[in-house]
Amino acid sequence: MAAVRQQILTAARAVFERKGLYEASVSDVSKEAGLSVGSLYVHFRSKEAILVALIETADFNGVPLAGCNNTADLLALVETILRQQEVPDTAGQAARTALEVAAIARRSPEVQAVVIQNYEKLRSALFDAVLRVGERAAKRNKDEVLAIGESLLSLLIAAQAQMLIGVPLVMEAKIAAARMLVTRLHAGPAGRK
Image (tube, rainbow, N blue to C red):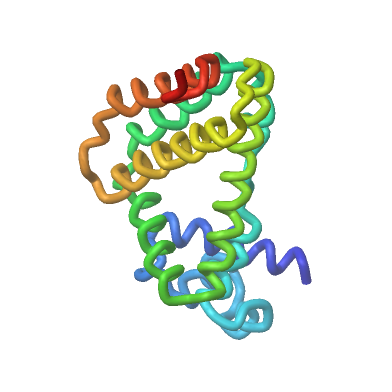
């Protein structure tokens, strides 16, 4: 049972990446998996249920954030993530699929719940890294460290959103902002005399 379910998810990922969510049909997924449509429905009640399973099983990799032990590590990782947004996938299908997932999440509480869960994992991993780096840099004001983490997260999300909708990223400004934020981990409290 689990092997067939994984076979369907692998096929769905390939079909969604190739055609997008809206253009892909359950029939396309079953054909890609080498199964009948009826067999697919034994495992998933709908295309949306397949999407939820794909999002739930997405490989969230917080390991790079776990490896950030100082401001240089953190800044290098943030810059790498930002620069990845500059490299669009072939034909922009991954970006279109991400936009489709966002649209579905707005109308489907089930999809929205798993998207939020993955977002919270990312946010938590980033905040853990920023807190760890802040502690090692002897940054005493936890609220300011958390504000830096929230600002870095907002910067990363803004870059991804701009890539998804196809507007210029102004990458050097984003990297300068990231450097300024990470540098604050070494500085004294902002606005205090």
